[in-house]
Image (cartoon, rainbow, N blue to C red; front, side, top):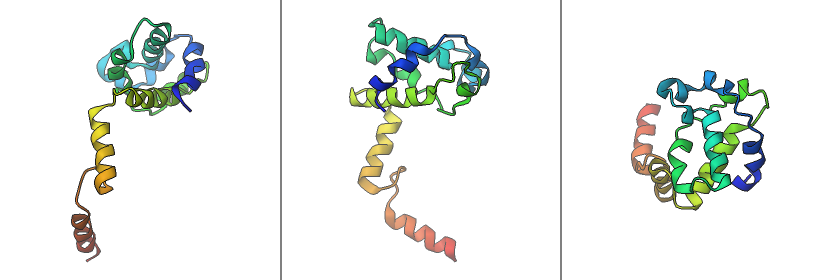
Length: 130
């Protein structure tokens, strides 16, 4: 589903903050903008025109999409799908994450996310098989 199709989830967030207790990124940074509540607030501001796309990318990429926030969400919102759709939209608009872009480039060119040469992989496979 596209970002457009996820707007209703952003609008349904009641900003209760229960999601913070389970978020591994929030636990590491103590930044509300790294919790699901914070991300939904950022996306709400984007929908209202208070922020531009170039201002939301950093926080959207600081999410593991582990879905721990959904375990405590009283509204049962699928936050991970919103984050994934937002990332997809960011890429379409030219605000992709450098690591993701490198992985995608490697997959296109050598069919390996790490950019390793296929002949090397075959050599290692044969060594492992003994």
